[in-house]
Structures are given as structure tokens and as C-alpha cells.
Length: 247
Image (cartoon, rainbow, N blue to C red):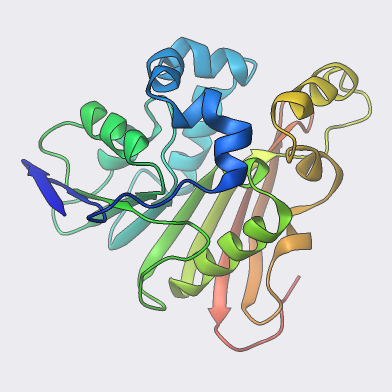
């Protein structure tokens, strides 16, 4: 089913995709229930949850792209706040930004935030099983998604993201990271967030390359840490599709 509002095209399945059990059980309060969207879609609140770092992290993403998204860009999973409208503003007339999310309620919410002149396609799709051709996109973005997924789903999401990026293209990942032992939030915030988000502890304990597929050739272009190491931005470049992982 397709609905179009100006340049924004929303594509979803005829019958809604089932919500994965891990998402329904652990994140109904944050993403699944319509009231959750009403509560959390507030710029000040998402900034508070990230200890005042939301705008800083968005700026880092946009700066990494040099505020220019030529070609085709894929954002995997919606995000609260103004990240996607800001990405859309960087897309030239001949470019395209596509956003996928398994939750229709999140896509509907995102569509309301976007200017009618934005050239976007919103697709209801599972990040761990993208219905997209190989080597299509110039770049893909994972913004605070991996910490919300069980390990097996996280592995599949990363493999799928890299699969749809063309050689020479990039994957940018922004998420939690193992914080410095001198960061007091390591001992205060990390245990608390794991009560609310039970898979987040993986990101506090391990580097992201633990879940990257071996069959895709990639190199690390840059790795940045923020706020005492609590957050990270990792940019990977796809080299070739059938080579060993390059550290």
C-alpha cells in the first residue's frame, strides 16, 4: 500500500508486519504504543535522555556527511527528534533519502515531522531482513538502533545494512559505547538503562565489530567518542562484497 503526501512516499505492507516479540515485550512503552510516540516525540526529552548530547550527535552525523547527501541514502529505523528532517534538508534535487522501520506508527509519526517538499520514501520493513537489492545505497545510517536489539537480530541488521551499500559507500553507526572508567555514568546510568533496555549492556561491554559479518570487506574510516566515552560514532566503508573483514 502506498500513500503520498507531496514528495513524501509512504510504502507499507497490505497487512501490517508483525511486531517482533523482543520489541513488543521490551519497548512497547517507548515505540510501539501510540501514546509512547505522543510522550517521547519531544526534542527536549530525547536530548535529556541522551544527557544533552542529542544535537551534538546529530551534528556529528551531518558533519561527517559534510551536510551533503548526494545519491541514495538509507536511514535504518526512525528516530525521535529532528534528525531525519535535518538529513532531508541535505538531500539535493537528484538525491533520495529512504527510511525504513518495522513499526507503521513510527513511520506515520515521522511523516508528520517532514516538510512537504522533502524528497523521501518511507518503507515499513524489518531491519534484519531488508527487501532491497544488493549494493544500492551510497550510505546508510544506524542511529541508536543496535542497543535495542538482541544479539542475533543485531548481527542480521548489520549484515543487511552492509549488504545494501555499494562498494565505496559508508555505514555510520551512532550508539552507546563502553564508557571510560572515570565516567561516573558508567556506574550510575549504565546499570539503570539496562533495566529499561535489556540489550543495551552489550554495547557497554563490547565494540561493535563483535557483531560485524566476516564475509564483507570493510575498513574503519573514523571512530569518535562522546561524553566520556558513553556514546560513539563509527564510520565504516565497504570495500568489496566477498573479502575478509579488514580492521
